[in-house]
Length: 294
Ligand SMILES: NC(=O)c1ccc[n+]([C@@H]2O[C@H](COP(=O)([O-])OP(=O)(O)OC[C@H]3O[C@@H](n4cnc5c(N)ncnc54)[C@H](OP(=O)(O)O)[C@@H]3O)[C@@H](O)[C@H]2O)c1
Image (cartoon, rainbow, N blue to C red):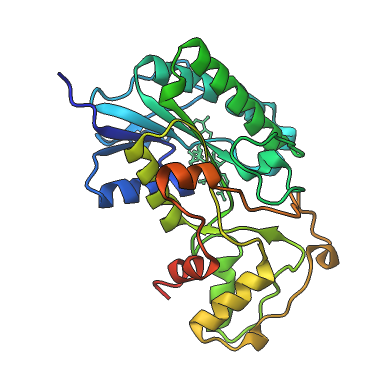
């Protein structure tokens, strides 16, 4: 019998895919990543483009796939019909094919499906998507659930929604770190709320979900709804930088249009914690991870 203990990460070149692959490798798991950059294909980096008509067959030793890749740019989702097609038609088609191949599949979705007006929505709460990206992810979830139902594969499907993920290179953090090194002030927004998590936390938590094989809807979230000013203050405290190098402002004052401006960003994790023991990530731990190499 073929050993199917290996993992596949669809979207190896994404922020989340990269963090997940590192976590799986740290745990000694065999993991393949997919790329649509043909010139970078290797034994462990296999070609997969949702837009390609070439059928995709997972390597024979893979028993679990994480589908991370997506059209993620908010502006593109508003204007480019191809983004809609990738998120709502082609991704569910690929997931149906992976389920038919007998794999357990995790689809990565987003907190934005809840619309941001309700605090701490739980895993099975109703959606209220307000921007095209969120609406596309919502429709994608529905299409994937329908495909799993038709294939009688609901026990091999999970949908994992995430809040905002940070690594030190995520905008605007890289420019903050650079400014503070030069003794310059930064201008974080007080009117932009999020519930951040570190990429290390997300990679490890997804790898745990992959080991536990929990079907159904799950959430990974930061434990705190904070503004970018709150995050900047926590970072300067940790780094020993003078807090006068924070000059709070607002997106409104700067005339910057923000497509998704939720009042509440954090996700309730009751079901996820009950079934897996994973808890929301505290802001102090996010800051520790972001400053580990500083
Ligand atoms: N980042 C966050 O804060 C956040 C928060 C909540 C949920 N999520 C969800 O988490 C997932 C990953 O997000 P991310 O920020 O890590 O993504 P990302 O860095 O923006 O990367 C998206 C990836 O998708 C790939 N891709 C796009 N279209 C494709 C296609 N047609 N075929 C194959 N691959 C395609 C891209 O390939 P190329 O590199 O070749 O362009 C890219 O590597 C997404 O589903 C997103 O909705 C992210």
